Image (cartoon, rainbow, N blue to C red; front, side):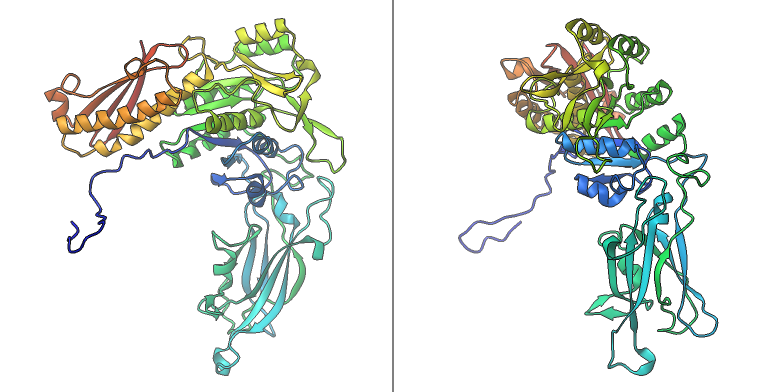
Length: 544
């Protein structure tokens, strides 16, 4: 409590809990796929430039990298940020390229520094390093304690043609320069520690191409610095199978590999995702992932369609998909300017998932999760048209719609737009994408904003507080157009009192909250039950 000694305004901190959602956005995009380069842990990128700095551009990705194409499409469609999961095969994991540097001692040199490609893959074989002498960092120090630095220059020389030999390292290929680093862990340069590993391996400002490993040479400094080299090529990098010209050596992912990749999302608990399995339409792959999304409860999967399918073939193919409300499929594939080709006018047909996920995220930001990500306002920027087999008549669109396939069509004046918003579910309440995603959004938000109730005294004070917090949130959501009804009482209700919190549930440490919402379409109540107790929380959804 502030001591009031003078006229004025006093600010005092309070222990009263802050009821802020732990998930400020409606959902995050997630792309799962294989590519030749990139971190093996889930990585958040906020732009195409950020993606390229981590996973390389199209010159790195042996055509076709479905992950690159999907993420490129996503940002073209207005996507903001995404979690990228670079898949590997469990049977034959990739190997990082490397090279050992000897020290500059006279006589018999010793290993002093290992240079390793920043992540596994054959791409690392195209990395070259130069080591050149640096400066004397402390020329006034006694002779035995002087520190001589060295410079590291990194060249990246990708093949001119996929599978061809790398280019010649030269000034045009320099991607990073690390000047005046040393092998002395305590050395300083202008007041900054310039130990080579601290500088190059920094997770914040370090290299995007190499990682250093100190071999702890017993040679006294400064002779333990690596010897001068020019254009030393890293070697031994593999994409996950026997060495061969890419993409022939690209390993074939198994369904379990995708499931292992999906499991990495456990690093983001309570965060809803819109997921795309880049360029994958094999039911043995997509089916288990949709099932995992259904089990997790807060994920929605955007499925790609196979290429060159006629509308009739696509309708027949879609019937065999599982009927989950946590997934939707879009057809046909779309035509874009080929990012792999340096020549103007060259096009490439790509799966539409990246564009669709971008449309989801952009619609969430501009209109809210209750707005269907479809209609004339969903023009797919950068898409020239749809593949010829997917030019649709009204009859085709009717048949596809009945098969729960969302169409992409060309509309004069609007370009290629999303013209469907159905999930794979045939149940009325969960048949539509915005309805299912609204339920995901409300479930995650309500669970997050009531987490403060854990360990609080379970009495009428807490019940009233929970009711107030949830009612304020739902009132704002209704006023923004997220719920139907001409009044708050028609749009939602919150029950948290003695009627659903019995003495027995209180003794068990449980506080029960029942929330009913009237969704935009169909206008039926869906009941969300939240239980908070000392060990955590549960959320269940039922319809009535």
